[in-house]
Length: 316
Ligand code: MEV
Image (cartoon, rainbow, N blue to C red; front, side, top):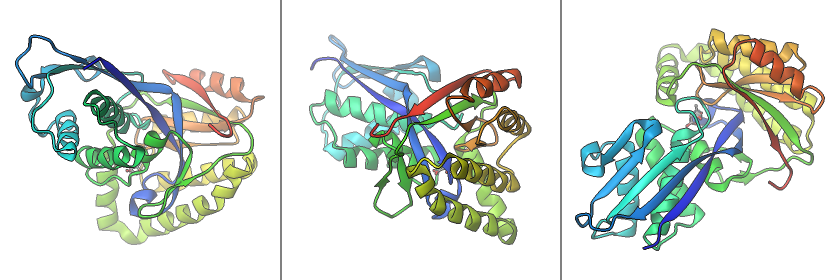
C-alpha cells in the first residue's frame, strides 16, 4: 500500500449557530486556507494490525490500543472499519497535523474526522464518496459533541457554502460577488460540547426567555439567504449584528469576543459576531476591500492574538 495524504478544511458559521441544533437554518462557508492534513504510511516490519498515531497538536504519539476505544480518533477509525466490514486492521503509521486551532469555533474536530476518514479509506483502497464521508464524520462528531447539528461535517466534507437545516436536503448557495471576512481569535478556548451543553441546560430551566431568541434567529437566517446570494452587504451585516445580540442574550458571547466585535464595527465592518460554539473562540466580521485593512488593524490593536482575512469567491 502506498503512503496517502488527505486534507480537510475549516469552516465559518456566518449565521445561525446553536439555533441550528434546535432545527433553525444556518449559513456556513468553508475556510479553505486552513487545513488538517493526514498522512498514512505502511509500517513495514511492525506486528500485523498495529496502528501508530502521531498528532503533536493533540499531544498524541501512541499506538491505537493505548488510546482506548472511547478516544475520538479511535472511535472515528472504528466507524470506518466497521462500515467497510474490515476483518484485519492495517499495519500503518498515521500522522496528523493541523493549521486549525482546537476548541476555537473553526471546525477542527469535524476537519480532523473528515481528513482521517478520507486518508484511511483511500489507504485501504475504498475511498468514501461524499455522502458516506459526511455520514461517518457526523457519527464521529456525535461522539465529540453529544448533539451536533451536522453543519460542521457537512460544510467541511463538501467545501462549499451551505444553507443548512437538520433533516432537510443540503442547499449549496453562492454569492454573486466576492465576499470578504476578517476573522479574529479571542484567545479563549471553549469546546463546543461545553457551549452546547450550557445552552441545553439554560433551555431546560429558562425556555420562555430563550425561545423567542431562537425564533428570531430562524427568521433572520431565512431572510439572509437571499442577502448572501445577491451579496447585499448592508443586509447581511445587519443580520450578523442582530444574530450576535441574540447569541449574547443567551450567554454565548464573552467580554473578549464583545471587545473584538465592537472594535471591528467601529473600524467600519458591516457586521460582526461570534462564530461557532462561542463563549470564546473566534469572531467574524463582514468587510469590504476598502475596510479590510482598517478592521484587521483594529482587531490586532484590540488584543486579538491572531487575525486573518478570508475571501469567498463565487463558484468556490
Ligand atoms: C458549532 O460549530 C456549531 C454549533 O451550532 C453546534 C452544531 O451545530 O453542532 C454550536
